[in-house]
Image 1 (cartoon, rainbow, N blue to C red):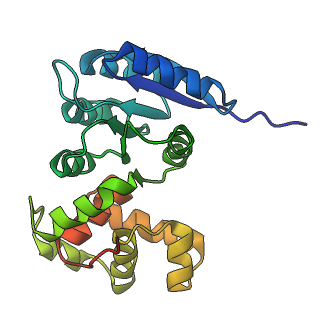
Image 2: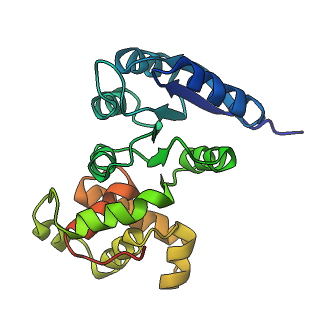
Length: 223
């Protein structure tokens, strides 16, 4: 019997109608995507997300009324399983850091290549994190400068030596497969360690874990 794969459901939240239309047209060319809804502001975006429970939300940061970060925080409460991917014109490091701390699974700039966007949405739906290459250096520079430090470093004491190895790898942007190779572990074991790290540090994503590690000088990530 042939198995039918459910398309990745996507919600578009952006105040520019023409931009939303372009993204919709792009994704409709791929059988593994289904654009289930659109919203022009944060308030409507939250309502639509509650109704539709999409797999991925493409969210603009700069919209009239409620900001993208506020929208992200409230949307997460009602749609904890949705991967919320920021898609913005802002290349400001403060915006990037704020979005990642708020729980975004990634941060992309609107001038990216269409194929890169498609791949990024697929990765987000698979539970991976995606940060535009142009922004990675800015994030590392800001965090290494000690900007907006988070919880006390003593929180790191909750981690076992192996879990500290894991968070060190996360801070370098390694995938589960890459961590498995680096630490000579089974990928399934890596997944369990990552879940334990997030639980102990009260974080919701591997991006937040990477940010936490850099802020608390656990490691110096490679750029």
